[in-house]
Image (cartoon, rainbow, N blue to C red; front, side, top):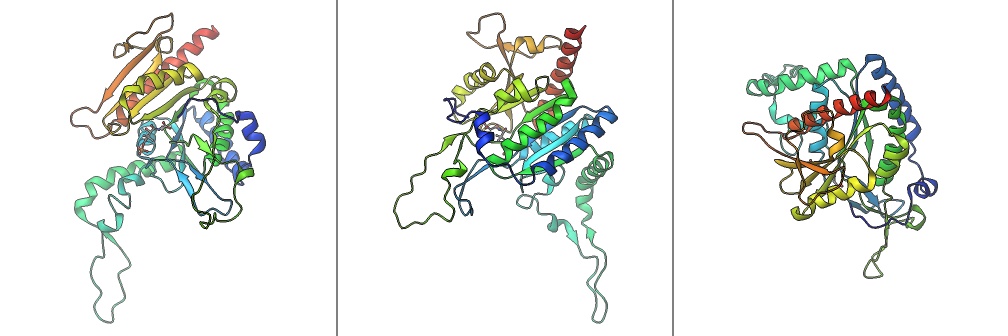
Length: 346
Ligand code: PAZ
């Protein structure tokens, strides 16, 4: 995300831009889900995943998109579920989802693993069953078992967004619902959210015509939504944001700047080309007070009473998903966050 001052504040954004038509329905679903999780005594994590679009027309033909397949979010959601968290998975429509991600149409098309048991002979009716290739079973069975268990437990709730506007309204509404959980909620904001948008008042009604030569569109900056999230909507939540950069030399300074500006708990920095096997967690030293933080080191040049510290995670030998370690680490910090809350109340 860029760091200049936005022209829209969060308040003026929500006052002037239209709320998505399904918002109330979606928030009712979240409210009910949260009530069930409170009754079941589960912690909840909101995982955001996938990229947002910025439509250029009301009758949208063209739009600006953000890079993200949804791998980080979908993979992490599975690990949170494994640790007993309830997950609200708020993702870009058609991006990867927990469990089904293992059979994505582009990398592992599901139809390729199916078999028609025997070809019907002339005059016979076609087979009424479908078989799965035996070699696929050892891979699919544990995924299917986990998927079924999660469905039965009611621990996963899915929401979709497409545009950056959908995303912003949903994040505000969902976080206000989740604030009921106090410190028992974590935000894992892995979605790739546009920094720019075209206000609805300046959007062309119909498809932009090409007859006029070059196309100049001036976009406004998306308001810095983390600020009201931290200060107003969910003040006790444990908030983890992601920072994607393509220049590794600015990753740490951008992560620190985000923590400084918004005052949340952890920023996870990742470089575009190394994100699948290396990330850096950046936090204030005080957030780690009640956990074992031996993996954390000071960031060079840091002074002052509440220093920023870093923890580099690298994919371990024999492992395939760095999200396993990211989620393990965050759950420890979230537990510490809960203990700190209790200590401050006593
Ligand atoms: O979805 P994906 O696995 O392809 O990519 C994940 C990611 C790089 C979008 C995510 O880790 C991230 O950094 N999200 C925040 C992006 C940003 O700086 O806005």
